[in-house]
Length: 381
Ligand SMILES: [Cu+2]
Image (tube, rainbow, N blue to C red; front, top):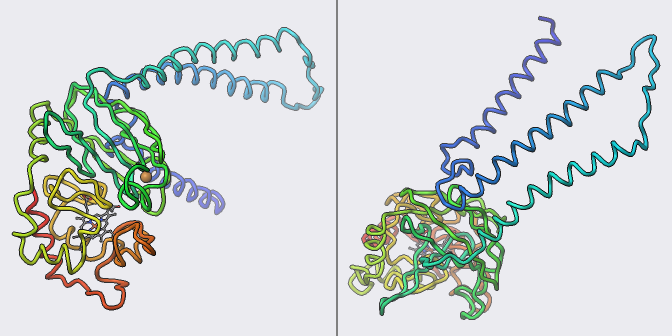
């Protein structure tokens, strides 16, 4: 092999390596595969895309093939004129290549537009859930029913199989007091996307958008915020846990229970949570009905993940998070310890660090204290 050839070979190798790494991200094993639909909406979208894709491939082959054919057939050759016969202004050709694409697009438009309206229709007999996109996590609210209180949770959306789920998607609720679902952390656009269940839907402040989910297959489906929404947008995952209606009902009624360990009976953990570190400025552990600035922690231990589904819920991971959350995912939380978010002078987005950038006069958290807090939170089943 000549020197130049071997150098070219190396470039090809590098390119092949890079392509393998890039394509690995598209592997169906990552659980966010639009081409592996498990929900009614996702199936309908897939059924529409497939025939359109075939038409697109045929058109593509004709266009690319035609280009290659013309380039080869009329290339410059010795002894031949380099000016082939000119067909500029040929009426038949011009009409044909205007009408054929117009007809193809018109035909494709019919099922596309009708599916848009179908997807948008309000589903009948649906389970209602409100989804609130915050920076950078998702809150899920199940309305109260038959005298039962509502349930507020985060990170993991539970749904029953075989039912229509009508999601009301919100980014902000201007009717609420400044600081909770209104103010810092909720004034940007998100997009709610569970690729294997349905299409994307934008989540816009001051507006309620709707998305229908429906699946007959129990399982865990991965979701992702699909609209850039600030520092930790890329970490804004979530999970949809589809369960049999019986298992779903059992989950919902366990979430309605008052947590087994009350703050008052939690001893030192209670003091650390409400006084020393004022976690209660942003979280509650005593009522699963409350929407707070940070995720509702009343039944934290019933989740398998935390922090937008980014981390598995283990004690050691939880301790790292409690001590220094902004060290794990980027947040704008330097002044979050000054007071409740939304109060004067507190422009806090996220959760503060309790071991770094500690404001003057405030305590730095020890590992022992983090352990007490983590043990307490993990008792909230
Ligand atoms: Cu987002």
